Length: 106
Image (cartoon, rainbow, N blue to C red; front, side, top):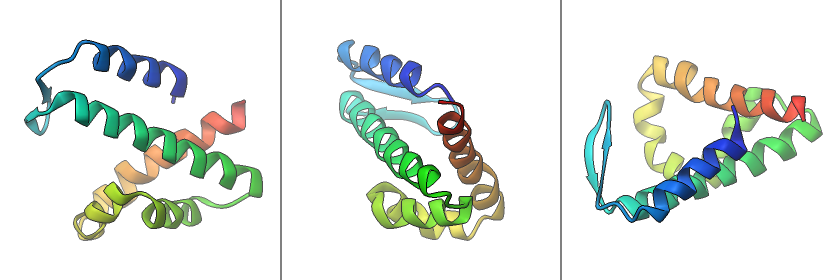
């Protein structure tokens, strides 16, 4: 996880004022600028949640619960993710662990 580089990349994408984004696994999406800003906001939210949780010594499952509670996009995705073990235990937990590792190195 390289939070600053990721946020810098998103800022560069936003400045391009793109009309569409083409996700490798999900195909095209309209309103690219809005999507980039939502992604940036979500990263900042997760960073805040995880940094505070790491300072308190919270475990990954607790952080996941906090993200589900505070991230509206994750609330929308929770039912789908909950039905798929690979998503729940793989992708989401790996993302959280990346944030944890990032903040422990700082």
